[in-house]
Image (cartoon, rainbow, N blue to C red):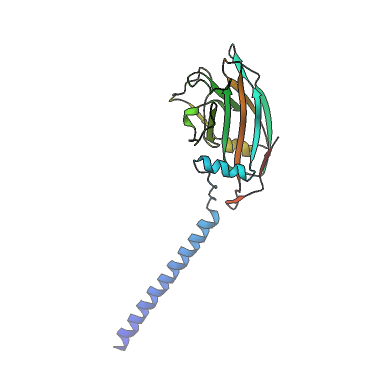
Length: 219
């Protein structure tokens, strides 16, 4: 009996030791994974309310306001060069644009909003806009996620285009401290007016994955 009991205790001891080693290895593996896991980028929800919250916090820049623009013989007149500077890291954001023609919205079939930074933009595809509740009357408004800007590189503009390009302006903004945007309206109506072009954004620390408030876009 003593021999059998001793043997049972040895087996139990070995099992406990094996279990302890397994638990230790699991803890170490978890720590390693957490140590080297890529931080998750703070997210900007697909909603107009989220955009408004960033504006209320002052986390935005107006690229252009109250600027006339139209197109003649395939050339936008004038097209505005706007240079912005970045400090800190941008996590996500929105592009908001409001334009009009002589107190009316743009012609949905032919007119387009042209915004092109560093050849990563063009004629914005308005059909991909985030829904805007209670839109301003007699204007055309568009709200796009900054990391998914859909555009057509060239005219003619096609509002129902199935083949279009998508640019990530968040990555573009973070890759350099200074970026030039070209902005204009592609419309034959000489009363074309750009009321507002605005970028709202969230800041973050890419090392910790935490949202911050220390980034800034400025002219």
